Length: 273
Ligand code: GDP
Ligand code: ZN
Image (tube, rainbow, N blue to C red):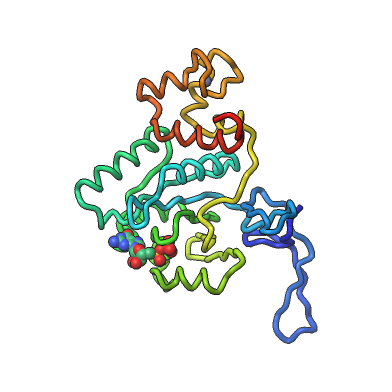
């Protein structure tokens, strides 16, 4: 049950109301959504609130520190994107601001996702580094920006489309929190058919219900190996002759990825861990 008749990103039919002096349209039909992100209603009813729909790609913006992006957040977002079959790109922002040690740490994190096969980019929204590369990917697409407050989402939109002049920094974040107690999304129509959905206050997708045996299917590096698990319903938890557990031990699968998988499994299945 959804509380939202129309959401940002919806494709609709509408009729022009000729009687109005200003051009007014009345929505007569919302076309079927190919996907949508949800947020559960705050009240106790099981209703969901559709925040945005028809997303072609998600760009996850990551910073090492200032603010810190935890790998658990990255992996949950990626699992959800896989579940929705939305391609995800990882943008490591503020590359201009890191010292040598931080850069090393950042590249270690990035290599985990490179190895799985995700497309990752080192960018500086502020300095305009590598923006041309990601802009090409964004052409004629509806894109959701995801990432913690302060990672540089507004700065990136400004860098892609300098005419936008979005407010950036701590003040605008406070503004969002202060005035908009309910969640909302807005879509920016940029040049070259780039449409960016920004969801202030929302870090990523809403809650998705998944069964425990589903989660592993949304880990591409698990999916490739799991045919070699002894049991075909293996949850890669403590089962004997599990190919995933072996790969974690051998270092072929990143420990952080596996640990975050266990976290997600535990959430789905409270009695287990
Ligand atoms: P948002 O909350 O994700 O929209 O983040 P903002 O775009 O408002 O950026 C938060 C702060 O980070 C601002 O002070 C920006 O100037 C700064 N920032 C954003 N991108 C970069 C970058 O590439 N490098 C550096 N050094 N600072 C950045
Ligand atoms: Zn297994």
